[in-house]
Image 1 (cartoon, helix red, strand yellow):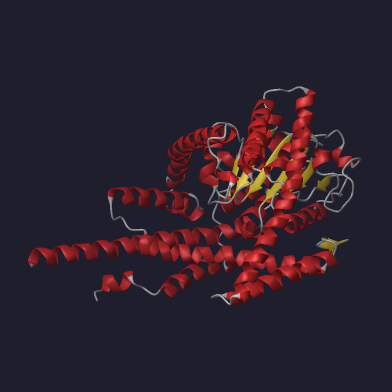
Image 2 (cartoon, helix red, strand yellow):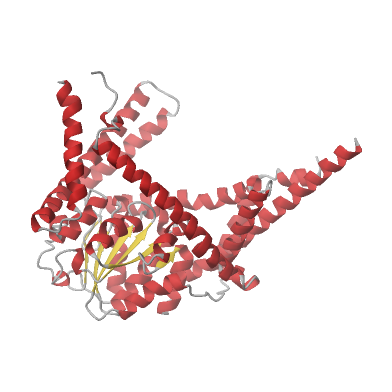
Length: 280
Length: 216
């Protein structure tokens, strides 16, 4: 077996160790490379920045713990920004398995920002029906969610003053890891009830949402951990996402190097085979 | 009986399909009220669907355990996990925390479900790296194009890549904004037209597979 063949059949545990080290070392010894801000992320930031105080922002946390590393920092950054701007926040989720995490993150950020449940923000929780929940909220928010996650009636809460349906929401952002998520919010929400919509998603599904972005159906898109890091940089509060970017940089470069090596060995094998073929 | 099994569902599908397709274009309060009621029904049906799903899962795994099929031990774990979570969920009244203090249900969620789902997702990175090394080869011209595009986007999406090859960020954005968006849009339009055609076929009773293939 030639060297190239041996390298192509390398034990996959070696690759696992390389990736593990590329993730671990930058987390232990961060470099802090500068992060360039993209137009997509700036779209969401600028829109929230332009909203007057006490505007109503709806944040739909449509993800579960599997996507926590990418979407949790996005949610934290957007909430910090909204609370800093004294906006009223209505949070909810379309993913039942994300309910506890969404409540925990909302409570945490609200507490550190000195905001009160019911007065500055509300967590509606989850309701069955998927996309039907969006339509129902568009028709009558109190019909869709008669009580919030804590069981308190939604009607009469100061944070919801003047809000009867999605038509009264100034800006909605869906942070999604799949379906139902950003697309559902556009198709069943924005298109009919005419509110401005921004999105956030995992890196894997971001390319699929670019058509909505280019056509203006979304006014901004926060894609993956990179998007979260950009948002953290924009609000000037560097957190988990910025810290994770060094690790992501190292793993991306490691995978590129691995792919390049694999191709070098592959072509050297092909060349060897061709030479042997011409000799015989 | 055949009328109830065949014609009746087709009739309901056709009438509701046509009414709700038209409803979108009628902003009259009565039409809006109809939509409000219908979506409330959908939410209730969604709740029942959840119960149906859980029941079906229990049936499938009960059969596996009864027949001692390969991997039946995992079905026992599934039963234990589901029944255990349901029990603590009912005990905690469905609340993960009460006045900031985590309940048993919250503990199950935070210290079992969150790390388990996180781990499942995290190990993907290792398998993707291994799979990329083994199969991402420029075997043909098309594969080479895919390979180059992937490398550029991977470089352009991280600060280290932009630092090493400054132009990679702009090229990566161009690939996502122009090439990717246009192709995705074409696929999306095709899929949407297909969905419209399928909806018409269902509404007018041409497509009947959703009725099931039971005996007449």
